[in-house]
Amino acid sequence: MNDYKKVVKISKFTKDVRSSCHLQLLIIDFKKLLISKNQFIKKLNKNNIFPQYHYMPIYKFLFYKNLKRNQTFKDSEQYYKSVLSFPIYYSLEKKSLTKIFNTVKKIINNHLK
Image 1 (tube, rainbow, N blue to C red):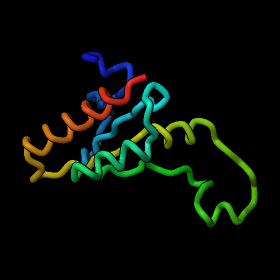
Image 2 (cartoon, rainbow, N blue to C red; image 1 turned 90 degrees about the vertical axis):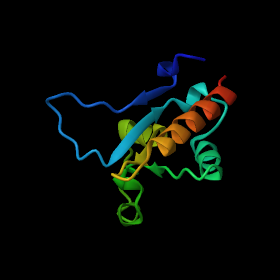
Image 3 (tube, helix red, strand yellow; image 1 turned 90 degrees about the horizontal axis):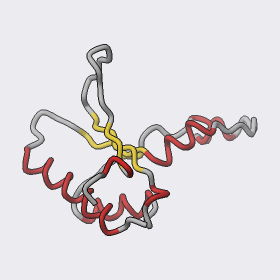
């Protein structure tokens, strides 16, 4: 598959938006893959790539669960299910970026529905 836009979106910034650029977010449509987010992360980890879950919805934290408000927020839930964050830092080498890029592509190609 050459058109990853159907499965992955990359966070982009316009000239009107400022970012500290410390993370690169990938928004992955796991419904189009035969792999879960957790399995995807495990495959990345096996390749020494360690993305992070990005912004768990606040109401899922223990403190808020104890409030017993029984609220859910569909958009924040969907965002949490689809986004992975990859750290970006000054000493990150092109070789490492290429490895990350190629590994993500390989996992997607191997698990397309």
